[in-house]
Length: 154
Ligand SMILES: [Mg+2]
Image 1 (cartoon, helix red, strand yellow):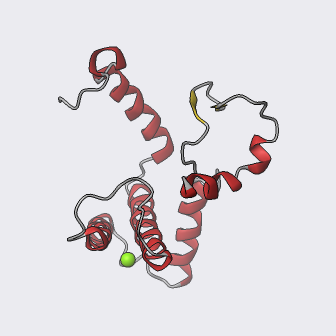
Image 2: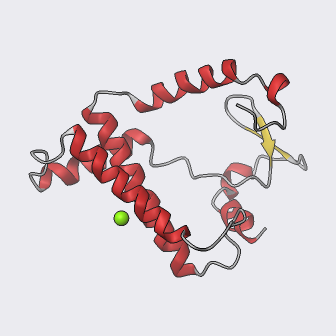
């Protein structure tokens, strides 16, 4: 609950229009519980792509950032995320019991994963936000909510 409240504070302006409704209405018209953890809307994936491109350009690192190298770097960063969860057993949502330092470590490693993923997509000329929309549409067709509700079966 603490995490949900902390995150909610980022959205104070967005929720000012809200009445007593328990449900947050998103731009796409979908509904979700008001206590659901949410991201801030910025930076967008395109913002992240541009920031990383500037970082890479300034260091003349594009000569090293071919797709295969970026993929290996991405996998390495996923390994760094895994290390933070290693030997801890199952962890509940919101990571109760994790220290602030551990949470910040995780935030940094997840960011490394995202940055490399975005740069890999850029160097492969995959427009990632649009690709996500197409893939989510495919996932909805493959797993109709009416057929798979509450089931983990493939
Ligand atoms: Mg890292």
